[in-house]
Length: 163
Length: 163
DNA sequence: GTACGTGCAAAGCCTTTGCCGTATA
DNA sequence: TATACGGCAAAGGCTTTGCACGTAC
Image 1: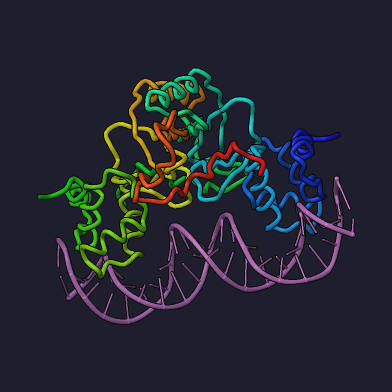
Image 2: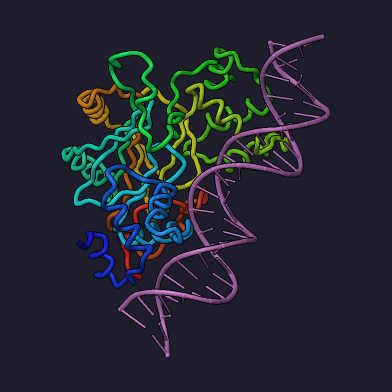
């Protein structure tokens, strides 16, 4: 079966090579927002010859063609996700680094209006919320943390301060 | 006269050294969102002995104590601004890289509610709009571009694509 | 006087790039 | 076959760090 990304690549006129196909599939199946390293690791399991440089080149290419979108989500490394039909926003759990997506169509419309008020046409929009879970049900259950990525983005808004 | 940052440093119990005072003043007077390089350049005019490493260390320290906030605003380099009383958002001109700030209290409240709906307490919030100016009044007035920073963040959401 | 801060230079992390052989359309 | 692509390793940009000296409290 052919992924949506692969179809888009064909339409644009990109050569469909092994590495691109692999990366396209990984991205299609990803539920989270993989960074380049994760993509490379996964691609590497499909074909050990795929290099990190190729992953970088490919995501860049895909991004330039509007197939992918780059996110920061509080960390220094770029994370990628497929461009969707509509914008969606991200809520980052400051403890685990886990990312929750949510829609908020009204907000998008509102932001478009805000931009217009300042004389701008809105081209894209990033909304990132950072928060901590309310009422953790038990004690230090750190073992529950997601294996996907170490909390690289916890330092983002350290309101804790002093010491 | 003593800046707000300097006062905060004292309260927290940080030693007020020359470099810190210089950086605090620069930040207090900044209307834009300087990056580390700009801070260093400015600090350097106040005291040529101030090193880049110190600027990095200082903004990091200030950020950790909640005095400063780090922004990306579509570029790879971090930009800093003083933490305000309330959140405000940023509208980035994709052509010039210029940043406009705006308030939108309703949105902040809305986002707090969204976070709560997902079981999170909102700790901080980043909203960045990227757009292009509507109806530029004349021709290519590139000379009007701000001298502050080259458009480092134009690549952020290249919807232009192909070629 | 002591613990903390600073300058300098080296290292680190993430990302891009040059070169050249390889594979796609 | 011509062109675009991929692997490798080196370079690049931004940021952090080790060390020895200096300085605020």
